[in-house]
Each structure stands twice: as C-alpha cells, then as structure tokens.
Image (cartoon, rainbow, N blue to C red; front, side, top):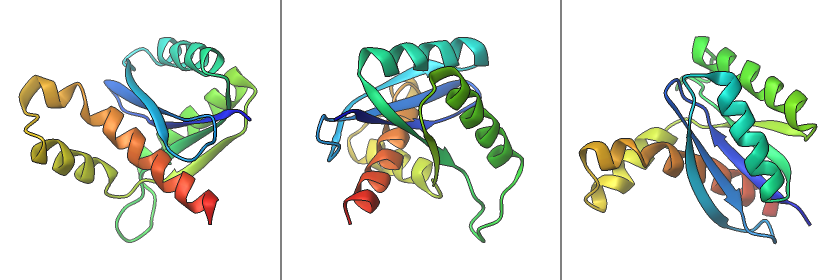
Length: 138
C-alpha cells in the first residue's frame, strides 16, 4: 500500500503531510519553500518518491459560502502541475478554516512568532490530510 500526501500550497511556503503506511493517520510533516514554484514541485516530487506516495491531496481554499476565488484557481493549477510531474492521482480537498484551525492549535501549544510561521503550513497540511483520510475511511 502506498502513502497519501496532503498539500497546503502557499505563496511563500507549502505544507506537506504524509500518511502512515496504512493510510489511517498522518505520519510525518514538513514545509518546502514555494516562492519558486518549479523548485517546490521538484521538492514535492522528491518527497513523494522517498516516501512511496501513491496519491496526493491538495487543499482547495474555498470561500465560506462555497465559492472559489483566485487562490483556489492557483491551487488547482498547482495540483495539475503536481499531477503531471509525479504521474500520481491528485485530488482537491476543501480546506476551509484549516489555516485558522492550525493557528489555534499552535496558540494552544505556545508557538508564536517565527516558530509559528515555520510550522503553520505543516499543521494545515496535516489537517487537510486528516480530513481526507477520515472521509476515505467512512
């Protein structure tokens, strides 16, 4: 069985979460710089190969009313580029409120300033992946 990778795509940093082998929980997280999109994609391709990933789930930032804005279109384009670069199936997953939840989790654990900035995207990716894994498990 191959792992599933969750992605929280951002302008500066992209959070990456990878499931365990049973695809039941998040096994690891990291952040890759994404100001250079080609480098970010190359980093994600490398991580996917190293971790035997068989599927990718990219967070889709919808507005609270369910509509999609410019950011959602950027994420869809990024997902398509990942699909082409990895040859893996890529799904979109509604990520409404994941960044807010990630900030709340980090506040509860006393992560502030630079420490939070470097962690929030990985936590958001974990929340995206956890939501997808829970849905898939039903």
